[in-house]
Length: 346
Image (cartoon, rainbow, N blue to C red; front, side):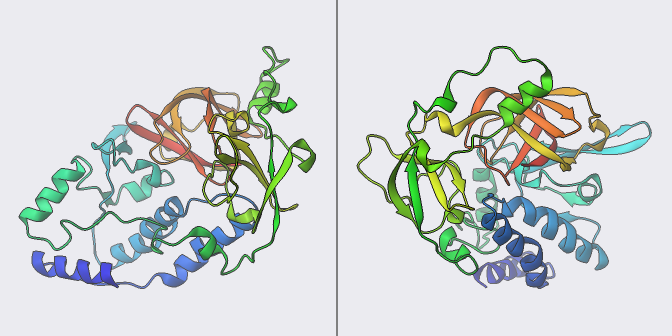
């Protein structure tokens, strides 16, 4: 309500019409229900990416166009450019000029049709400049804090939110030592490329006997790989980090310190149906490879990686191991400033 009132005041100040549409039903069906299902299955969804794909640039965009709008303008810190190729237009999704605020990752599931109807009027500016412009126009939002928390839901503790549908269930917290045998040095040679990709993108399957029980949790579905807070276990030399969750057995596996080998993997895989190309003209065929820069979460620096398109799906192999690759999150790949495509980590 507060955000809506602020928007109304800004619209009146600028002399532009103000209208609201209620998309709560679609949001529940497409985002909230999906989130509950993913967490229940031990995966970590990204509601912000989904909200852009399913709500802002789908349902909302359609409504805007039906009202006679030519474009939808948003406050995302990213940029768009257009070029021609073989007589057709290609829309490029580019990083925002402010490196601390680049939000192209959140738009990694957009299509060419959606990009054709979207404007990013502040993408070429620094955040500080935007606030300065808003202050010069005497807008009520000039000093408003950045929005935080879940998209359209706000700042809420995730376990509290999930408890609406996922009941607490006590289980063991197991600490796995860094000396665990599965962390031994990887092979230096493989029989073939498929074997190499399967090794680097495969996950370790733990059992409680691989470590020692160090505490108790209220539900494995409330936790995600790489999480440090909320474990409630003290007395360790270094903090414990979640290295894996098993929602079927309701066990959380942890390791000491952010450098614990259980946190790191070089590769991941995207199922064929979850591969998405913003640049459809660059879609890879089976057997092709592509060198890219990629990231597995917002604000992570881009990392050198190679894409391998195989019949099983798309493998992303990083030059260096990455921490806390979580199933359900999105991997996005770039060429320079341009975001080329993305996929759900399986």
